Length: 110
Length: 191
Image (cartoon, rainbow over all chains, first blue to last red; front, side, top):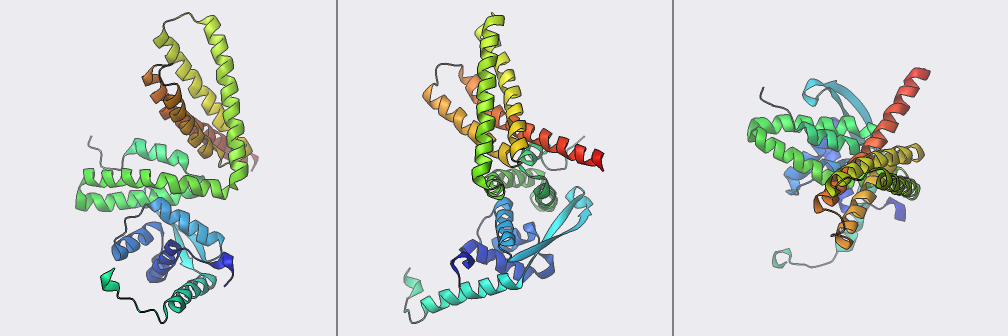
């Protein structure tokens, strides 16, 4: 894995959220998914900044949906994970798994 | 008439920070969630959540703006805008001190209005050079305002210095928005 391909922890979390959401992945849904699963309070700005960074790296792509009245006539931007993103996520997870292999830690004492 | 939507002024202020491409999706998401939360938390709780989301989003959004516009050039454009403002304010001060012989409070008010105009022009100029620069200029203006309050706190009335810290960033962002809107209108006319 090249150095530029490494993913930060939050980037990994956002990519997993996109995988979970499938075709319904837009900013607020990603924020809700992460908040519900991790209990971490997030700002929508941080989610979009990360999605944009991932898009610039070619790990996700986006398209604009329909404008709806409940959004004040504003359109949604949907994001989906690309194969590059899936690969980067798999490599990051694999790196952690390899580093942890053979370590004997009793997590309950931490 | 009872207001049922999200806080309008906060939305307007926040939208000044957002580039056009982000405005639709980000504000749309917040408005949609506000409506959802209003049914469970009530309007007050939903509006509180909405304001806190906007406040917490300012940092990441501004940072993303700076990154998107290749930050060194953006900061350079912001500093050019800032120096233009300093030049305008200094010139305005010399002119006002010769023309106006009013009390300190009136002088401060006129000076505040002139500062607002100068910063709007600075934001406009910065946006002409780099579209993301007004956000950086707003940050510089706020930081300079706080630094000036801490260093020369007693040289000007405190209300004046606090007002300057608040209105200078708003003026810089407004100048940027005017430039972006004018650019958009010109594109429409040329089609």
